[in-house]
Length: 94
Image (cartoon, rainbow, N blue to C red; front, side):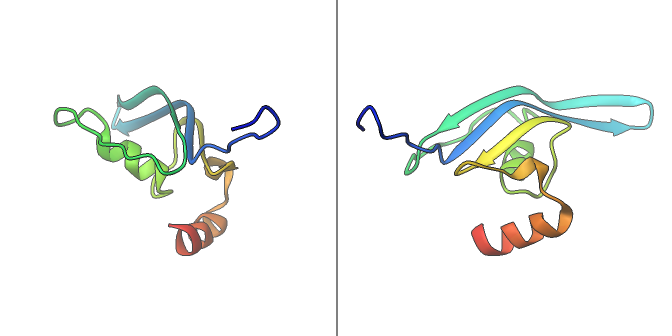
C-alpha cells in the first residue's frame, strides 16, 4: 500500500455495545467492542458460552442493532440504516 492509497476496512466496529433488557434487569452481551478487519481476512471467533459471539455476528450481519457504537462494513455505517435500508443491504450485500 502506498502513502496515498487508503485501504477501506472490510469490517470495523467502534465502542460496540449490545444490552438486552429482561424485565428490570440489563445484561450486557457486548461491552465496547473495537474491531478492525482488512479485506480478505480469515477470522475465527471463540469463547465460552454466553461471551457474545453470536450477538457480535448478528450486529455485523445487520440482524441486531447495537445499543451504542457503530458497525461499518466496507466503509458504510450499517448501524445508522433504517429498517428498509437494512433489509435492502442484507438482501444485496450479505
